[in-house]
Length: 152
Image (cartoon, rainbow, N blue to C red; front, side):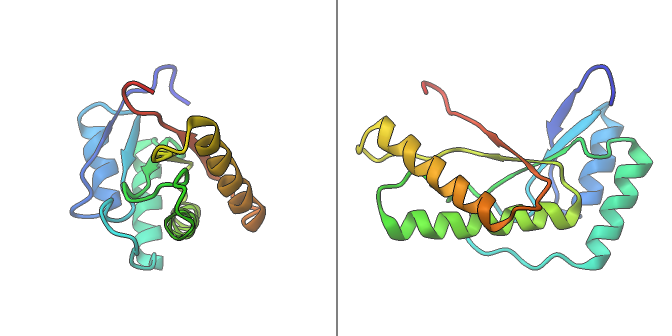
């Protein structure tokens, strides 16, 4: 691992592999990407070709496991609404699987909003959802990173 990690959130319009190579070109030793549209619930399946191209780019650039994905902005694991929280949990599980398939080492998520039900309840719901996901995916190797927003 490089002594200093310097990264950027890179556009993936031409593919994750292109984002990694472009990140390296601007001096990144780590990159953050979206594995799918951050404004959609459902993502396309990962193909073997995508895995191979990304793996090749990660090796060629030396970035390796220093690639981070950010999940969908729609996900709200803290929601008091059971249907939204479950939809969020399923979408987050899908993102964990995509990251695992692609060899992405870390996944950033915003815990979500408690929607007026209180911080303690929101935190409890996030912890419950994450624990359930980790129980469902016991062998996954992706590190989940919780990102707060301004003022939290």
